[in-house]
Image 1 (cartoon, rainbow, N blue to C red):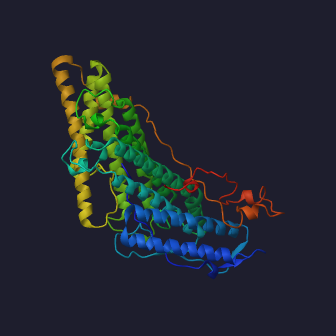
Image 2: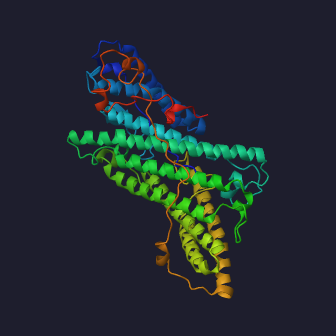
Length: 492
């Protein structure tokens, strides 16, 4: 399972020197020019990505461009807070709110006068780039032969189902799958940081200016949206970890009926892993759905029924349904395989519930394809139809597996065990707590290139960093050499 394919925002041009005034005794002109150059470079790459959408190459270019610009942006915002820089004119940052607006070729830009808005869109762009980079990796993990479990196009694209794949190549693909999951954990960390430290502050700023906070601004300006995004990305990462857990055992992946082969991962563990995914998607769905109420009249007027935010909500809702179906599947198999005959009635109930959810999903064209894309923004109608077909086939394949276990257990109970079938409501209270394999990777903002937080500024005599500066919401202060965040190391 990879993640939603995000539409990357684009931005308009600006020069920081046109509205910022030096208020310190330092020459900051060179730094402002450098910041403008990095932002201009980011703008150019975002425009290129919008035109071409060249998968991993473009996602990596956006990733690198944001890493170059973000330290400069943090330097400017920190300097404004200590009056090293002053506003000569009101800044105007123009961004296309691509998760709010429709799929029209040229959606209008929003004119935003807050540095918090600029930070929000830059951090969200960072998040999208990391997520899309993960998606590109998963899309590259395809099989090269037709020797697979299913004849469907969905299953034939999953590398772990390729019986002819050499061991060395399989190991490399397993490692790439781990990289993709790691990128999602990093993206989730950036989104959480944005929600807690930037977007929430932007909401409060809009309240102070006379707005209603959540009632003004694009959906990207909602703290709930960024938090929901973080939960969704972490759920996506957990799904990739489950896929990697199953990948080493080909017989385990291909097996479609009882009994389970010995090398198969524990059904109890798999159920708990999917229950954790279910809880993350459920929380994400609630948060993102609530954030859609933050649309302004100007942005909501261009919101189409197939807008990215609507597609994102559908994606999370479908992910929640799929995780629920899989948790019920493995709860049922655990009861049937390891619960002695006394729990076979419980197994039948869980598998019936799983089958019902999967049948609803396959009939509606929802769900996952085997390459890992559950939804997203395609580059053309043909691609979208192909992805819907693959998602429908994936859900249908899972329904076949569930049906095979269900029939075997029902037949055994009708002819051998005669165990009473419990009600679903009686079992819901017995559902175990979910278990996570991966955790969110906390994002630590990069060290500023100048001003408060930069190395030269810290060593300047007479500056009370332990006093006044620490009480401000300055970014990038007091960092260790290795933060463990997104900026601590290269992608490759």
